[in-house]
Image (tube, rainbow, N blue to C red; front, side, top):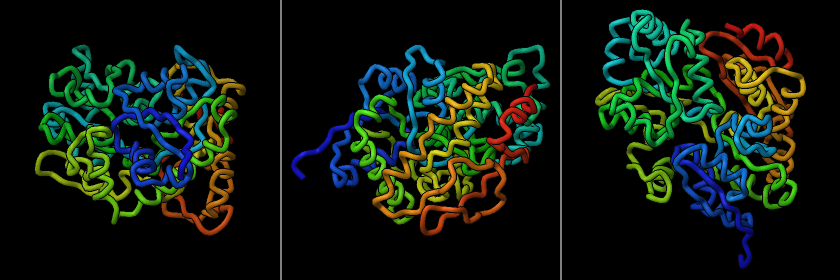
Length: 405
């Protein structure tokens, strides 16, 4: 191919950047007529701002970030869309060894149970009432990490704004912050939990898949203006990334995925550390392993489909935690940030199965379940929340009222 359309893409060194990295490294982008220029960043604020001012055409982006940008919650607000997700799962809650000792004394098990570890944390927090609060790090105010940590805490009887402190720290800095005692725990995507464990400064207490199975994490983010200006390039990029998701989802390729991501230009971490997240064989602490089959899902369960119900759940959490008020117009803007129409149109030439619906009830599937698709077969779930709740996007008002603390 003699002429490639160049796309500048920002990303953070995280496991779920794999789909963009592999799309370039394995040639899927070139086969679609694209040259992906991947630019590594150190913080989500950089991603947000550099996309807004046009330094990046697209970005590996926190799933709630396009919604926040479109609803005016950022310093530089531009209408931003997510025509594709970049996988499901991938996060963990890691605590310092000192906090883990307290949790064990309060009855925390070592099986990653969100309910049981949350109950133990409630006891520890109650015992410190009136004293210094525990401090947890998350990567951005508008992140799945912030919302799932808050959801877990609140459902465990801990108010995330009154009972503890939550601070913002870029992902690669979280293990250092934990090591220096600046925080007592954090919620972040792989590999930074595994990095903390390997350094002996952290212990994985629970995982995203235990809080909300099959839950969304990162998306392909871009401005609405770029999507209007370059529709053919966007469609080609969606196809390239989708093909990368299939390749990353094949367990026979995991070793090669780890080797690719380990390079200094990408994650710059040892391949064996990256394999923990890719394989779901997590090292909870030094010498202590646990298997989580659906820890990170790059392709199965329609992992790259931009469900508008995911967008509305993130919106519900923005309202819940006081980041904006709930109105019908705000909810409409949030839902329309996610663009399943662009996803379906781009993948139509591939003839692959794509969900027929734009939204679904979240948390309702106790087992893998076939769903309606444009062609072929596709199964979703299981996808339950740890506290047994479900989110029906058609009953958004009731959900928001019910979640008030």
